[in-house]
Length: 274
Image: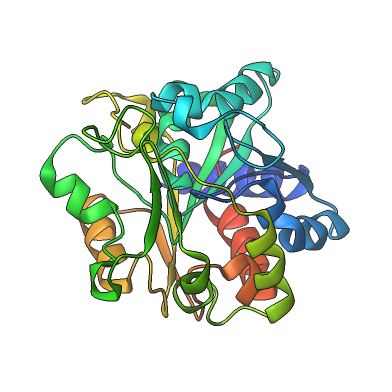
């Protein structure tokens, strides 16, 4: 027992002395720009920070209506992890639907991820395999009426291929605790997300990789998109190593960036593997 404790202490010291590399994944309609506050705070504290634009997001000009598979959508993250040296590990952070990207990556590159962090995120071990998974992981905004602008790239008789929350509802639903200037930025930069591809996310059952990577969940208490009770159900269904509570709307990267940064560093120093 004492020998094991000494090994764990040694790993913790090694991690603290090693420069952490945080990699951030946005949610639907977002982009790497979502993380500008967090990147500045972590970078100024001496950490390495990478923010990824998934396919059709941010500066990637792909048409979201032409992205019909989750593998295609998540390819920028997978390509980035493929390019990392074998000895390098990252702390992978996903927000909202970006949690699906994190889970996909932990399945494929468990040895390159020291910790998976889900921030108000969809945390489903196998993706959308069942109706229960859909209910647990997809935001239910029906109480607010018809909230999405949809596009039907495959035809009106087929499921929608892209979606974005209507501009007049974005402040109310996603950014109600965020500074006005950040909401203004988001309203200018958001793009329709490839919802058809995202909802096709399926992860191999019985994969050993996903359970090798420690996970933490950051729960947002005043979230109107992925509501606290919905987050609780995902946490109970696939219990992470730790859960942190944050007073925030669905966008803590804007509404509570200083506390979010502190939680990310705390999570990484407490739970990340060397």
